[in-house]
Length: 138
Image (cartoon, rainbow, N blue to C red):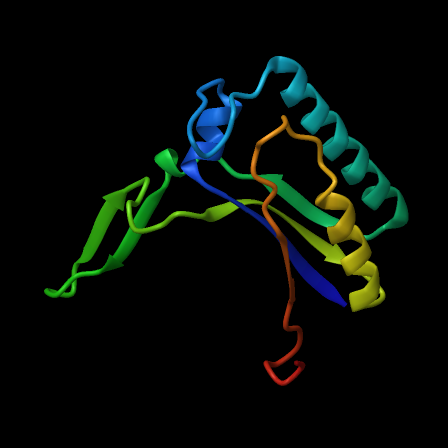
C-alpha cells in the first residue's frame, strides 16, 4: 500500500533554520542543520534499501510559494506567499510503499526523532494512505 507521509512547518521554522530566532523557535546553527540533514539522509537511504521509498522531498519556505485560485470574473487570482491566514504548510513529504499501516507508523515515529535545537517545535507527522485504482479502493 502506498502512503503519503507529511511534515508540516511554518515560515518561522524556515527563518529559524536560516539563523533568525523568534518566539516560535531558536535560531538553528550550522551544526543543527548538519545533524538534521544527516538524519534525513540516513532515513532516506534506509527506506531506499528496504524498497519502501518511492519519493521524498523537502519543500522551500512559504515565502517562495504562490496560490492560484478562481476569481469572480472566471480569471485566476494569483497571490504570492506567505499567507497570513496560514500558520502551517507542508514542509516535506515521503511517498512510501509499505506493507501495512503499522509499518508506515513506525517510520513516522522515527521521523519525529529528527534532531533539532532545544526549544524548536517538533511538528507531528501526518500519514495518509494514497487511494489507488479507480477511486473505489479506500
